[in-house]
Image (tube, rainbow, N blue to C red; front, top):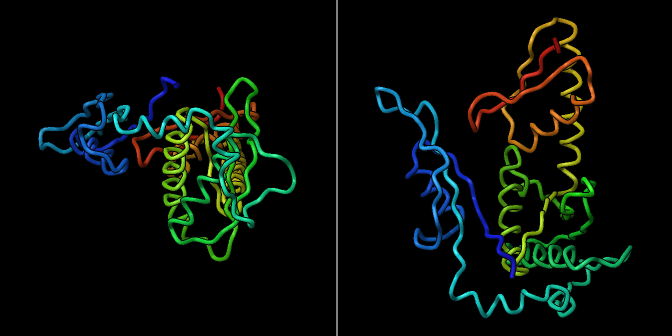
Amino acid sequence: MSDEKTTLEVIAPSVEEAVEKGLSDLGLTRDAVDVEILDEGKRNLFRFATRQARVRLIVKQSMGASSKSQEARSPVKAVEKTAVPPHAAETSEELTADQAVVRDTLMELLAKMGISAKVTVSYADTDPEEKPVVLANIEGDDLSYLIGRKAETLNALQYILSLMVSHKTSYWIPVQVDVQHYRARRQTELQKLARRAAEQVLATGRKQYLEPMPANERRIIHMELRKNDNVSTESTGEEPNRKVCVFPKR
């Protein structure tokens, strides 16, 4: 069994609130996790948080999960025995064990949510030295509610799926969930936004601050403008209002 453990980093006004929020997100009790305080935060004279606390919750190995983990040690065999719904079957190519377990687990999760949809899986284009990311795209009628405001619902669904998959396999599989290729469209929009910001910076000589974004979207901005020799980027501010600043290279 792999020694990797499921972890969750949480930011909140206080350590106690961060721990409570993390436990709520994980659906666990306090005795089921180890807590590592990464930043105790800072408060001013009036006890308002001027810097938020940050903690890491590390899920303990459950004593009661031993019987389930026996099945998860051979993920290929587990996938072969899985009954795949007809509308979820892949016809273009044979799936790897990781892709199959991600697809089947997502189909299982959607079924529990009462959602009828088609799931297709593929691998993301990543550095050959990095572990491949399994992309799972959900297609169906009127599934916009699975995306939510600023993809909050979609990110939550992705997080839950990652936990379920790692529990089944006993090792970590990088997963990205998409709904009707929303993330791909959003990436294109962000790349255009980054280029427009760079043009304004070069035209005015002044810094440009973009709207607050989650870390994965800020990364798209940084990567897009890395190719521009005339501007630089940096992330500024505190979560959840952290944003990208674009400025001229000196």
